[in-house]
Length: 294
Length: 324
Image (cartoon, rainbow over the protein chains, first blue to last red):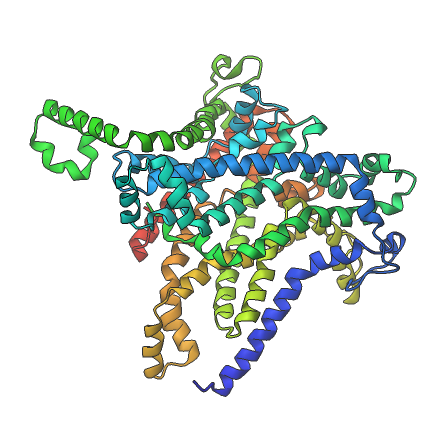
C-alpha cells in the first residue's frame, strides 16, 4: 500500500520518538554501568551526562564487592530464597491452576471466588505482621517464603492457559490409566511450557527483588538477602557503608563510596537483565486479560 | 440455603427441603468420589489463602481493640471505634488521604494513558527487529529492583545529580530535589512511568494483535485514513481491555504501594509524600501502635473494596463490561 506524505512524516516521527524513549529507558542503567568502571575520585568531581567511563578503566569496584563477606552471604541467602520459593510456588500454583481449569468439580467455582476475593480485599499489613510474629516466624527464613507462596495473578494466568488445553488430550491419558497428578506433570506442563516458564520467571524475579518482608521480619544479618545489603549501601548513610566494607579496607578511603554503589547495583541487577529477554516473546501469553473475569 | 442460591438447581425449588438436602448431599458425595484427587491437589493453595490472606482479615479485628502484644489477639480489650476516631481527629487523616488520592490520580492520568498511547504507536512500527528491540528496552525497568530504582532516584535528584545539572543548564540553582515537597509527587509518578510504561503496554499490544484485520481492510476500502482507522477500528477493538484495566486501577486508587514511598520520602516531604500505607507502616511497625494503625489500614481496605464495587457497577451499566 502506498503511504501518503502525511503518513510518511508520521512514520519518521514515530521511529524518532521510539528511539528517544529507548534512550530515556536505558540511560539510568547505562550511567551506572559506565560509572562502575570509572575512576573513583573523578566520580565525585565530574558531573553531567555520562556516556563513557571517566578516567582509567578500573574493576576496583567489582573487586571490593566480591571481596565483601556481607555481599557473599547476601547472595547465598537470595539464592536460597529464590530457589526454594520458585520451586514451592510453582508446584502449588501448577496443581491448583490445573484443578481450577477443569470443568467438572462442583467446588471449583466456590474455590475460584474464595481466591479472587483476596485481590479486592486484604487484611492489611499490620495483622499480617502480627500473624507472622505470633507464629514464631520472626527472624526465620520461612517468614520470607511462606507468606508469598502463591500469587493470585500468576495462578489465574496459569489457570487460563491450562483451560486452553484440549479436554481430549487429558481424557485419553486418563483412559490409559494416568492419575491426575501424573497428567499435570507429564502432559499439562509440557504443553503449556511457555506460560509455565514465564510464571516461574515472575516468581523468581519478585523474590530476587524482594526487600520489604525481609526488612521487617529479619533482624539477624546472617539471614539477609542481597537487597537489604544493597539498601544499606545505596540509601543509608555513607558511614554505614564504610563500616560495611570495613573488612575490605575501605574505611579510610571514603572516596570509594560512589564506585561501590555503582558496582553493587550492577552485580545485583545484571543477572535478571540477562534472563528476561529470552522469555520476552512469551510475556503476551502471560498477561492475558480475559483471565481475571469470573 | 446453598442450594437456593444455585442457579442450575432452580427447578428443584418445588421439592421439599428434606429432599433437597438429601439430593445435594448425594451430589457432593458423588462429586467427592470422582474428584477427590483433584481436591487434594488444590488443597495446598486453599490452605495458603486461608492462612496468609484470610488469617489477616480476621486479624484486622484488632482495629477495634486496644491491642497489645502482651495480651494478644484474644486477650486485648475491645474499644469500639476509638482507634478510628483517633485517626480522623488527628491532623494526619486529611494529609495522608489527600496524598494517597493525589498521587494515585496523577498516576491514573499518566500511568494509565501513556502505555495505551505507547502501544498504539509501537503497533505502527513496521520494522519487526526495531520493534522487538524497543520492547526489550522498555520492559527492562520493570525488572529492576525497587531498592535500585530508589537508589538511582536519590543519586539523580541530589544536588550534584543529573537533574540538578539540567536545572543549572537552564539557569537555575542546583538543589536536592527529593528534599522539596512540591516535587515529590512529580518525581514519584515520573519514576512509576519510567518503570511500568513498557511493561503495562504488553496487555494492550496483546489486545491490538487480536483486532480483526478484516475490519482494517474494510475501512481502507471505505477510504478511511490511518487516523480514522485508529479511531473507528483500533480503539473500539481494545476498549474492553482498557475498561477492565481501568476498573482495576480505579479500584486500587486508595491502595498505593508504599515500598517505593518509604524508600524515597523523608520528614521534609511527608507533607506531600506520606500516604495511607506509609503512615500505617510508620505508626504500626516502626512505632508499634498496632490497634491504631490496623484501624487506618482497615479503613483503607474498606474504601478500596467499595471503590472496586462502585467502578465495576458503573462500568457494567455504561459499557456492559465488568469484572464479575
